[in-house]
Length: 151
Image (cartoon, rainbow, N blue to C red; front, top):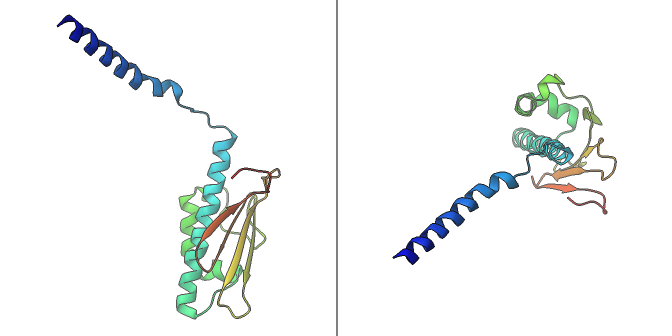
């Protein structure tokens, strides 16, 4: 009986210590990696917004459209983006291309027939790795960096 109590106590002790360990192992730093991740989430959110706005415009008009027309015609999507990502504190609206938001360079090329587009959104603040997010009329979003940098 005493052997059973010792084993039970040992198991409970291990379980208790195992549950306590994660709080000491957590990385709570809000360093550069987290700031980079937050900037990338803004880029991904913006590309999702552009894809939605382009799809809506295309459904109504039968073609995709350039940045200036897209922002003015589909303003509700872009206003919602600014509000969701806390950008309204720093900017009221998007600028003309190429630097549409502080630190972000946009290149949106609409195909000659209006049936497709290619978009590159580049982070001007990432001088070392040149982070960029890309999309097209398929709606797939891709991320890239310089060849020597990890994604």
